[in-house]
Image (cartoon, helix red, strand yellow):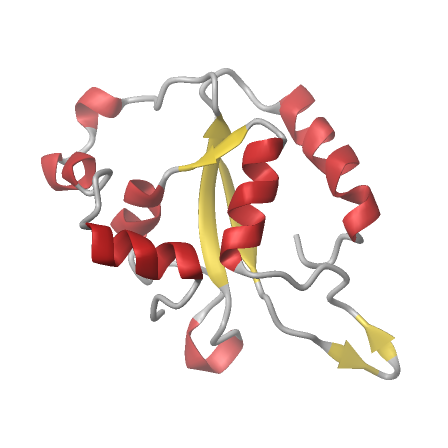
Length: 129
């Protein structure tokens, strides 16, 4: 998402919304740091995790932190080698129901209510990866 200019984010999310199945899930990997090579700035929208969550909520999407936590470190990008400051979001439309909720492990469902200190840490974008 950071490769998309801020002025085009709404258009991209409208496209996602048009093509996303009911109760569909969107997995995003976002790097909040500059990246340039050969004089070209690849990252066009550099913002914090909190900014992205708020921006996506404004466009009708909600992040499911319990699913992000469920996948732990099983991501294509992230970690010290590839993108140490990147983070992940798992989104659905705010109006949709989490699919297969009855099949998720109990500990995942219990993660949806995070302790206040952990929620503040996540909201500020300072959680460790």
